[in-house]
Image 1 (cartoon, rainbow, N blue to C red):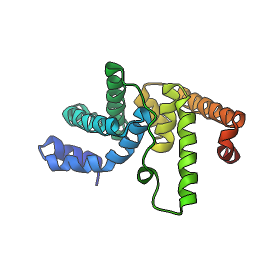
Image 2: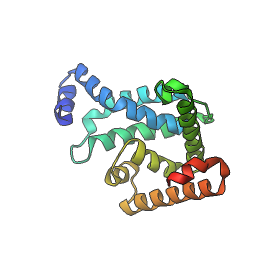
Image 3: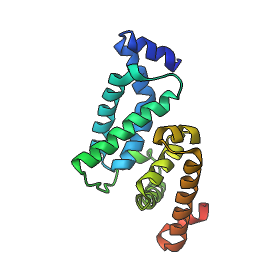
Length: 186
């Protein structure tokens, strides 16, 4: 269903229509915020708070830009504000197997979990904005234009930071023997 139509329904007082927006964005938004906080409970709380903020500010949304970018901007800014305000220490928690992968052969599960752990370690070494750009591009499949709009940076900055962060990760993989499987894939 068309997002603009759903937004008009919500603004007209149909609160159930907002559930459609939440259903569409809750999982990708949770994945992004989980990677930012590395704390499943905190990520869940921040996503819920972000959806409340989006609901409260829905009347301010202008149809000129992408709704997805607008929603992500509110959620990510809320997350960053909360992390700064409360000075949360980002804890590197191992996610439960069920959160990362489906039931499979134990060796496959181990390899996928290990590869995911290695990728998380590489991402954690990047500066905050570069990490966020990578997550928005590859985890949430936002376009360069949407990322530019969301983070208030130029399109060339998005491209440069994306290129630079992938290069840093590739160099780290080539330096460290622990990342052997990732280095083969490039």
